[in-house]
Length: 281
Image (tube, rainbow, N blue to C red; front, top):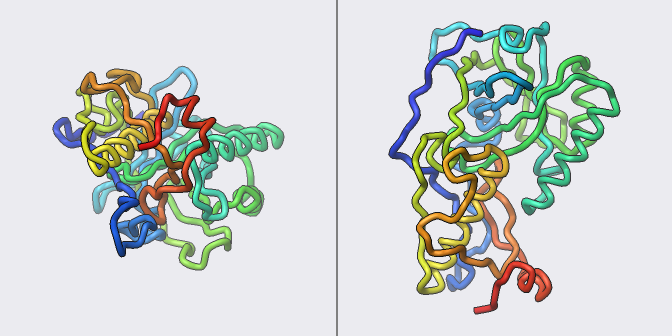
C-alpha cells in the first residue's frame, strides 16, 4: 500500500469550539459558526478507515499536483467506494448519546443489506468536530444516496481513482455536488487524539475555581471524551489528566458538527446528576 508520511504536530493541541458561557448577559447562547462552509467541510475532512487485521489508515487531501490514491490499493476491491456518516441526522442538534445511537442503527441497516463495510471516522482537519460512520463497498450511487437520505445525511462521499467527491442527498440546499479532491493515504497516528495522535499527554483547559473556568474545563473534557470515543487513545485511554479529577456538567451538551461548535442544552435531571456524581452550583 503506498503511504505518505504526514507530519504530526507534537506540541499542538486541538482547539475546542467551546459553547458560549450560559451566564454571559446579552449574548446569544447558540453555538459559534464554523470557520469553513459546510460544503468545504466535505472537501477538507479527514477520513479514518479501520481495516480488520491491518493498519488504520487516514485519507486526507493530497498536495496540489499530486495524483490521487485509488481506494483499491488499500482495500483490495475495485472502486468506487462510499463513505457515509451516521451522525447529526437531519441536521439536528445531537448529544453524544444521540450520535452513538444513530451510528449503531446505520451499522445495523448496512448489515441487513449485506453490503461489505468497515468502520470509518470523518473529522475536521483541526478536529473541531468528529463523526462516526462507515466505508461501504457494493451499492450503486442511487442505492447509497437513498440509504444516506434515509439516515438523515446531507451527503455521501464517493472515493474513486480520481479522489473523493461530495454527492448530495438533497437534504440541504448548501451542499451540492463537487469535483473530486485528490487524496493521499497514511498510517493513522493513534496516540492522544487531543494532540493529533502524538504520544504525548494532553493538557486540560480551565480549572476548578470560578464558574467560567469550570465551564471551560467541562466543555474541554466533553470534547476530549468525544474524540477518545471516536478515535481511541493509546497514551492514557481517556483517563484523568492533571490529577485533579473531572468537572461535572450540570447541563446537557450538543456536540459540534459541520455547522458549528458545542452548544449547551437544558439542565440535566437530578437522576442524571446523581448518577454522574454531580452537584448543582
